[in-house]
Length: 235
Image (cartoon, rainbow, N blue to C red):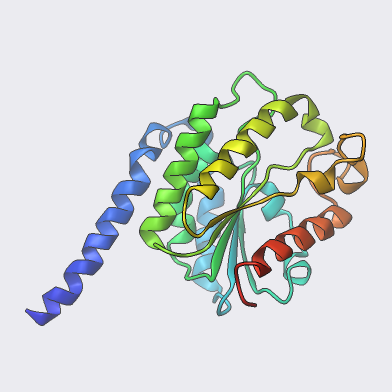
């Protein structure tokens, strides 16, 4: 009987984790644009099977700015890092894949950057959709890690998506407000550092596509992120 008492709480937590992570994700899990990332998610799962996470590492996850950050280990030192970014991640597909991305890790904290839900196209998500998806992702994380520090990085103002910046700002404000109303959840503000005194994006911080960060951009990004982490965590 004592053995069953130990097992039941585990399965109750597991069931809650699966239920909460699936509720909102069910709306998107069959969408072609979500299914198209299956190969990349399997590649991340393969990394999980062959790599051993460093102790007290921070899990960085989200879209291509995380995936392409090849110097993240050096840039984020002395913090230890687990990097699990994929392609052009959106909140809608991340809500579906989050259980598979985070479940095999036991990090010191999670840092999330997802920046493709508003690009200036007709398919951009509404403010309500963004809020619902952020809430769903948060529930998934909390089902697995009830009190783990979670950091959302502000969506960067980029030259290539400057026409959509007013809507992106509103999305940032929503995510920031969400973080302010949830324990152990923080919003990392970065936009001021990526804008000129004339309130224009700084092209010298981006690659030729004027969307992704170059090395100088990543160094600036990492310095801001580390400052935010140091206010909450101990290296």
